[in-house]
Image (tube, rainbow, N blue to C red):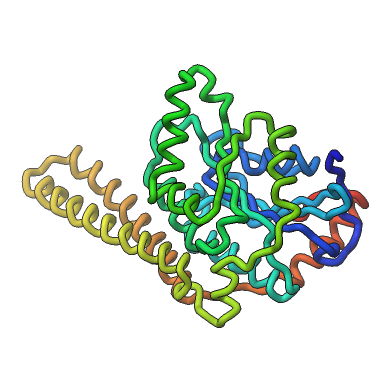
Length: 317
């Protein structure tokens, strides 16, 4: 049965509801996937900049179930730092706890046209795994996307790439060992329907981050929070090292009177200083751990949506 929009109530969730989170790096097709299947209009990116700055969702009725697809920014977001993103995800999970709800499934999107997994991809995977918890991996589908961008590559090359993703402990291998599985998304409509149908019948799971927050841990004390904190500490050290190098070069340029070099280095110093400030701010936010209550905001937004368009399929958080 094809999906159809059916989001008429001003409440937070229809019951029973199947909640499926869609996660992954920027540009992997998360929002396009949701828009296609839910006939929604969440904003998509058309380049390197991310358009998903908040956790958002779109609902549809499918085979008698309300299915809500939850869109979230990736941990490589161009507009937000990792602590902001983790805080938003934590706020959504705390809301689910208050509503006595858990996720039915999680999709992790990966762009197969990328020849190598960069630092941000590896970091994203580590954080995702600690957010979910190894015990919940049976509800995870690892989805390779953007096969259209890899159409000029030889099939054996792509197969080796997939095999590497599935076998590497630090990438997908560790998660697949605990029950996660891989699916190819070549046709969003057909493959997407097949992937969702494989999840909607599963029992819900309380992901690790949701469980840790329910137990009263601060965000920085959770496994995902510690992962983000460690990465931010590494970035802080790298920026401090870079700043020390710039200041040394600047001092030498001033001694030798190289005006052109001085001007360039002053600009680099200002840029490095701003990067340091962003990392310091992100660390402070993570350690403060303030997680806002989204319930009133969600209800208000849902009612506004109903006033504007009675069959509006998406709610932006």
